[in-house]
Length: 232
Image (cartoon, rainbow, N blue to C red; front, side, top):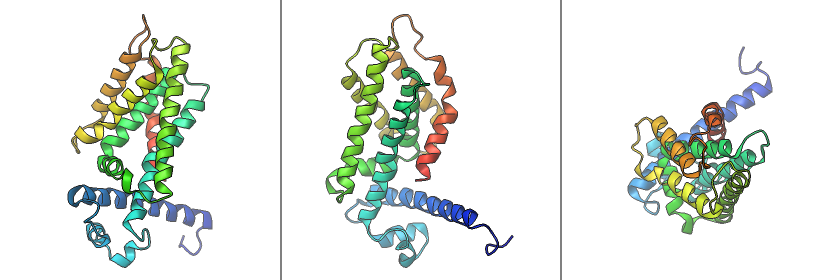
């Protein structure tokens, strides 16, 4: 079947997938160059060279470096906030299961795309509007939803008594720091398991096992959620 005879929906799906793959590679290449040369000194020509395309071809996706920061906000900050909000609303999951899911997701994302997180973290003060406001709103939303999950688990006796906000900030710090020390090319699975287990042990209620049995069922859901973020 030629492209002329293919259903419009199929062509649109393939076109969207192709664009997603290009944007994912674009963000990885751009943030790697930002990390090496610095955001201010990197040019669009540097990014085009790294991608092996002309500058005019690059303009099909971005028109400025600020566009890249905006795309990072959409993928890293807002994407995580949306997924966490969706997890928090689910009534079929316990608080330990929800927490294990979001910790696994954050650790995997930080380990597999460390430059994206690091550059965004370093560039908060130079983010263009409305990306800066969206980024800050997404960060507040992530903290708020995580506090809510921990508070609900504490009230239900699934977690030991802790201050939800302090604990949420500690969990976020543990996950975010992975972007700074994880060695690219290493196996991410042991890191995901270790950090998830440490968080479970930190919050385990008296007499409960540190690792909730439901956590073993999260891996497929986490990969599906991460795939959804990558397709943004």
